[in-house]
Image (tube, rainbow, N blue to C red; front, side):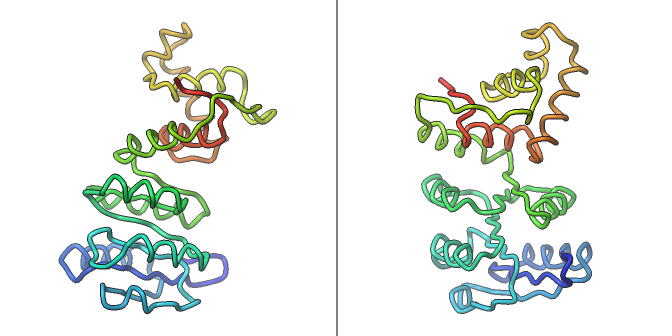
Length: 217
């Protein structure tokens, strides 16, 4: 997890377990320039080290997860919540903190590395398995009025496709709706994801709803 200024320090807040050992091994094998600080339920509220850049918090760690996440967020750290199952109400509160990552327990090694790289580059990663709860919360918060879409961000066709994606349309359904090929839809989706600087369709939808570009009824 080296950044432009050198080493990026990480604290992994997770109870001692085989899973924690596997996570540490994954980090060391794939981000060899890092130095790591490890926390447990006894130390999560004691670590206030300014050199820590990124914090990974396992939701099954004993102690108060929400205050811990809030504390590190206030310290302007990159905070990632990792776990399964999530308590719905707690997840919604965590989502309101606008953390950098919401990781799911069943993520494979390649997906964890991919997601971490997105976070380290300044982006956010939300696992699709959590999208239903998060979208439900956003829909509850949206008003009945859409705002003007930013000029030149997307083409008209890409805006149309993004609106259909927010309504839950699959690529095949969009293809039939717009009378274009499935391959053309995929190209448009790929282009709009790049322009929005998001990793996947879920994050594109969350971006659209967060900015109130569309009203979903």
